[in-house]
Image (cartoon, rainbow, N blue to C red; front, side, top):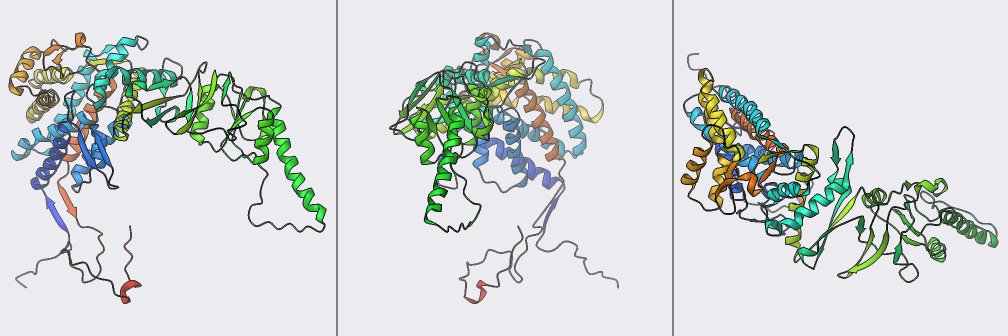
Length: 559
């Protein structure tokens, strides 16, 4: 046979793109994502308003929050979104910069791909640039004293300066530092671990002003005492017992039949139940608590015994809240009342009080002696404002946590990136072979951050950039950067515009590694494993109206 019939390997429904086409598509996608977010970088940043699936509104400029809400089709763009997510989980700040930087890295790689450079060459150059960049960071980092409050404030403020709450700068920064220093746990060897998720609770209560927000020296939760009329709502220096068991008689597992022969047996049964609860309460009351809190139920009878003894009780508390109370007042959560010991009673709290805020009752356990958990009480005009404030607070707390973990500072305002860029440019002359050009391009890419800052505060970008380049030309003046508020070129030390070292290092690593990963993709095969009903074409069909007949023979599509 002379003419071979074409061999079909891939199914018709498969789309396959390969080679430079893919690289261009990926770079385009990554740049598109970076452009969405670009305007949210820096103190003069814009907000984005997103409608989420449920029809709620999200107004934010936290890079991660925006990308979380956006529904994206292109695979390369999806991986960009993962970036900001990792950044958020790892260090909590720098979510915007990481995307802008990765987008820029890919943008400068595009010219090399046009010139038929091999992607691995570009990646190799990038990785070399990353190592050198981290070395530069180590060189210009300056240590910070964790106990020096003004330095910490400056740091946290520069993180929030770019956020919506920047105008209330000090408040949020104060809240964040208070909360993280309270909940910090020393692991020894000078390492501090701060578990933001577990031991810092953010309670948002609409109403009041932002200025009313504060960090409680203890915890609060949305509960009232069980019997409001009888129990005390305010106790000074309470003795607190925390339980993890129901104070009610045990019911049978499922249907339990008890056959009673005599009328009196019923009485006996009830008395036994009462006796059981009485004993439970007696065991608890032996320790003379003022406040009993349980995660499970409290029966009416138990409430009666407790209130008779003048003990306030709270029931059905969330486990996480209970843990926080335990941390705050030094109590131990007990699973069986029989096993209570004096050491389990929490005496660290200074005040138990139930207050009415708005139209709900909130229980405060405050003025603790040495609380290891705390609640941040946020007040604000509307729900949207509160949500945004909470997101900013999360970022601020992460920054504070990072500094406690790794107390080193870098200049903000694009100064770090410029220094890195200048140093890499110098080093690029000593890089041998074909990798020199991509290396130099990577050096240029770092300038994306200061450039975006300049754009966002409405400066003449070219003039500002050339001035800064002149200042940084030979790698000195490491601390000269751009004040994103006024657009002046100033020394970052004086303006207290700082970034934390761990955030910057993580940003660089994540961005460059991601750029390399996207460059390495040379083939996209889409349309795999979409099981279509036989005879269904891939063209969009008119919606069919289901007949009774096809209701039961629908094909199951494996998820």
